[in-house]
Image (cartoon, rainbow, N blue to C red; front, top):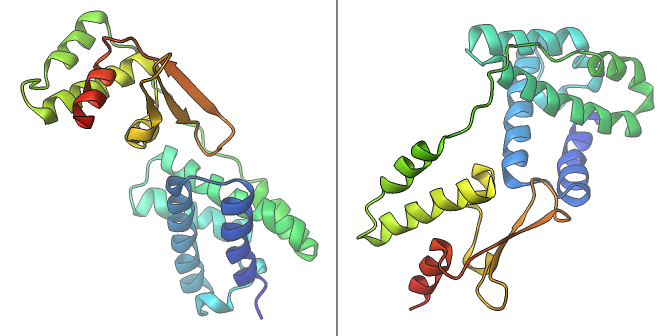
Length: 210
């Protein structure tokens, strides 16, 4: 049996899901990258994906895959680096299970991310924030919901994935009202943000409960 198949399965079930408790977004991203890689390697090696070995996924093939996704499929450099991160995570896990492939794994892990020009992160001015907050139609429930999401994002700095992942149970309206949020990819990073009694999040949750 190919050593790659059980390693791939254990990488997702043991490493990502059990040990790291990775988010569904991370699992989906890693799954998509490795699925594309296996398809590419299968075509290059002219074998079925289940017949691929770890030695088939050498640094030359990995580099060719990344170049193909960037130049032929239009992936940005940032996406290319994200795919490389997923591949390197798999190979770091494989290094502990298959030392007989140490040289191949070491060469893959040595592939550097591609440099690119980073855009300066700017911030919204107060008038721009006010303009955003005034856009939703607050005479409707949907408008009040959208206004609450924007206001919460401005006040807390939550990532978009964290913001849309909030549930009603994360809003606590008792003594010291606040919202709780788990940080990215870990259940140990519990973030809490205080709410004022006149906060729109409080008003929206109270309206939802009525």
